[in-house]
Structures are given as structure tokens and as C-alpha cells.
Image: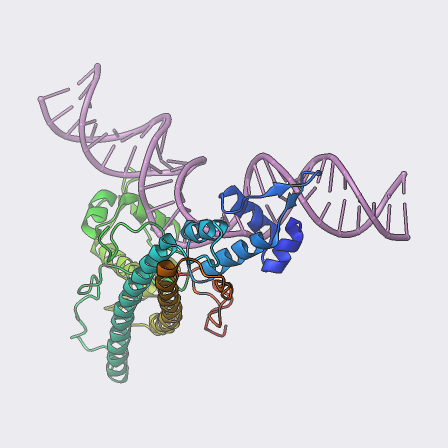
Length: 162
Length: 162
DNA sequence: CGTTGCGTTGACGTCGGCGTCAACGCATAG
DNA sequence: CTATGCGTTGACGCCGACGTCAACGCAACG
């Protein structure tokens, strides 16, 4: 199997496969023409990587799974290192979800307040007592940076004690 | 007030202020030396921006708040456009949290399963029935990309129907 | 006079995970 | 012979929000 076929079978691109190889996640043999040659095992490895990435794992975090598969284990998560990654990711997810919920409630409260004030302000025109506290730096919430997506760069201030 | 003082008072850097100016979020006057000059109003605007960014809003999303303040309103969220941004962000947060919870449960389930199999496999050595289904592409979960942080790039497939 | 400290503009670096383009080789089909 | 299609390597582009460095000006202090 050559790179194009593998890419198609894994639902990705040749660029991605070459990138993974460059990152050391794929070990690739070559044929007489210098073309990369892959086997079914490589497909399994590749699917493992893609699955993890779809769940938000960084490429580096997939490495233990890849090595586990290459060591002959039936699944990528059959090895202790992989389980460690699972656990770390789980904690990371929990922290992230908690943080997002705090922000969500903050935004919700601000929206509600602003809507009330808009409703109270409009029908009467601008009264002179419009001097509310400026909404700058609210209570806690150190900061959260809503992330519909994108992986996790090294986080120095996160909820974890590293 | 010059740029250094404003930066210090707002808890940010001069680089950031110049960046905001370049993005059109800060309108800046100059003195005789060509130095930027700021007033208290600029501090309020700046704090509004920083607060929103700390909550994960993109710079562009702070623009309505900035314009609202500059229009003379007592708060950045006194204008309908700002409220719209609040509502959009709220929906975004809800979608993101829901997605992360799905992923979290997925990872949790995988971890639990892998732990059980590890516990069952180790004490007995490798039995020949190790041929479990390969853990590649699981049930639903289109993909979630855990995001401890970092803002939201334009997302074509998100839970919103744009 | 030099040094420190503030300001200025311009421009490149960062991070991850690829996309995209260029310029090439080799093989098969017409 | 040429076109098409696959492969190869190398290298730049992208995204956001700045960090960082360079090279400069201008003021006050000693």
C-alpha cells in the first residue's frame, strides 16, 4: 500500500501522513522507487492517532498509544503509559469544563443584568443616575478564553498543580 | 497619561496597546513629541477589552463594547450589539461545554475499559483471545479538540447553524 | 559628556497541525 | 511523444494575540 491509498483509507491526506512520519509517529519503509510503503499495521496506528486527535489529544499525546501498538499489543491503550495519558486528559477535561462553566455563568449574569438595565433605561430615557459601577474586572474568574476547539498549549497557570 | 502608565494601570503591556490601536480598538491622540496620549476614558475602554478577553472573547468581539463606550454609554454592554455578542458567546459556551462533556465521558469509558482489561490480562498472562475490537473510530463524537484555552477560530462545522 | 529611561516604528518569532505550491521523477495510457 | 497520475522533497502560508529585538529620538540626571 502506498501513501495515497493509506491516506484515503484513513480519511486523511498524504500531507498529514508525511507530517506524522516527520514527527516520528510513523515508521515508513520504501520500495525500489523510493516510494513509501505501508502495511495494515500502519493503518491501525494511523486510525489510533486520528481517533485520539478527534478527541482533542495533541499529536505528542498519541505517541504512547502508537508505541504500544507497535510493541505488538492488541490495542493502543493496552499499556500503562497510554492509561496515564487518558487520566491526564480526563483531569484536563474536567478542569476545562469547570472553568468554562464559570465563564458561562458570568456571561449569563452580565447578559441578564444588561438586559434588565436596557429595559429599565429605554422607556424612561437617560436618567442622571446612570452612574453604575463600571463592568471592568469582575469578581473571581482569573481568565478562561472560550475554546470551541483547538488543542491545549502548555498551560502555566492552569487548575493543575504541575 | 502616556502609553507606559496606561499599560501599567491596565495590567498589560505597551505592545498590547499599540496592537489594539493598530486593530482600530483604540483611538489615540499624540502630543508635541509624537507620543501617544491617553485619558481616563481610554483606561475604561481598555479594561473593558481586557475583561472580555479574559472571558475568552476574541478581540473583534470586543469591538461593539468599545464603540458603545465611546458613544458615551455608561457601560460597554449598554448597547444592543454588545448584548448580541453576549448571546452568541453564551450559545458558543454551551455548545462547547456539551461537546467537552461528551468527550470526557468517552475518554472516561475508554480508560475504565482499558483498566479492566489490563487487570484481567496481567495476572493471567496473554491468553489467545486477546483479539478485541480495535479501538479505532468509536461511536458518535464527531470531534471535539479539548481546549483548556485559546480562543475560537472560525468554525465551519460547529453546533451552530450559520 | 554619557547614561538611563521613556517613547517611536518596523519587522520577525511563537505555537500546532497541517494546506498549498513549486519543481521534479517515473510509469502507464493514448 | 505527450498527457495524466502517482510519487518525491522543500519551503512558505495560515491563524490570533501578542513577545521580542533592532535601531532610532528625546529628555532629564549626574
